Image 1 (tube, rainbow, N blue to C red):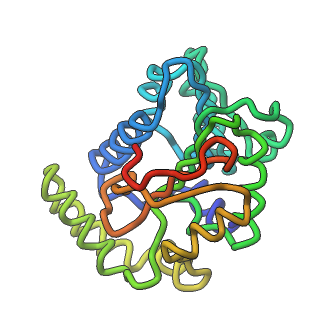
Image 2: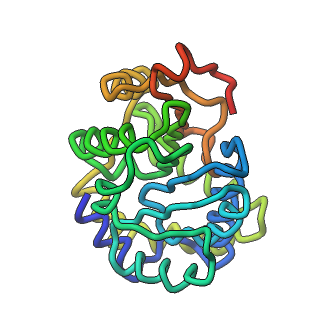
Amino acid sequence: MDEWIDYYDSTHTIYASKLHRDLHFQIIARDIIGYISSPDAVVLDYACGEALSAAKVADACAKLYLAEPAPGVRGRLIARFAPNTKIRVRSLDELRNMEEKSIDLVVMNSVAQYMTQQELDSAFAIIRRLLKPSGRLVLGDILRPEVGMGRDVLALLKFASAHGFLTDALYGLASTALSDYRQLRTRVGLQRYSESEMIEKLGRAGFAASRAPDNIGHNPWRMTFVARPPMASPAVRVNER
């Protein structure tokens, strides 16, 4: 994951425009809020990135932890949200020192594809320790083995067309094809999981899980999973949201 952390800590061009970037984080925040069950909830956004709309998430819960591995991004988060008393910024290493069974909802969105199998297992173990018995892990934007990059491109173009930045998206795709991102994606690769593989992996980590009906974010060809400590519920309904 280290090379991906370095990439996202750099001046990258993953977003086609400022509008694309802002809409991305607004939609992620909206979808995270949909999983918050109570205004008293304590929420952890694991490897949150720039989290530009985190204040909206914080408005819907009692406390929001933003955990981010990239030091430059983390510094910007601290500066951006310093006035907000409901938001706390942490490194991933600092999660190990947080109180056990203190979190109601953990969201890990668009992160698993950048982690090795072992790194993801370690993250699940930390999250399992932090979650309350009644808590949930929402694991979003999981890439499927049978769905290639073409679907990602189509999803972006549909999203761009619907929100008025199609020209920027086309230009951005051309730029990305020649960028460090494309080279890194080719060299390091991205992890992909079938539905059954991810449910099994979560099960080995001590979770009862199922696939959610809708993915977090704009890409319908990727998957989101809802997982609970098994003692909280014998099963997780497929249509749970």
